[in-house]
Length: 135
Image 1 (tube, one colour):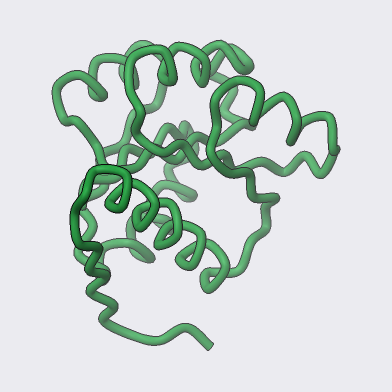
Image 2: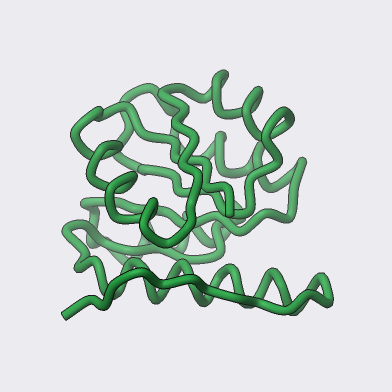
């Protein structure tokens, strides 16, 4: 599975990569809107994780742009726990919204759910290769 992570913070990128790689994920990192748009076309990811708090992204415009070009699931991570933020994310085309900090178990379960929905929509069988359990 290919995951495009739109994240400017190298620490957060490293943490998410460490979490996803044992589950057979290839994590591709974009640090800006422009890079993200290029990478979506060239890598065709299975999932996009967008950090809403990324200072290099232009609000919800990147989410709208992504949604206008692909049906790839978009997961928003944000430190904002405001219901209006969640509504804006979903209106902009996001498939799910999680508030940071989020436990690894909830993050992985959400990713599995989004990928399962995508597989079902495409008529594919969904297989998650979990290498370890989350307590």
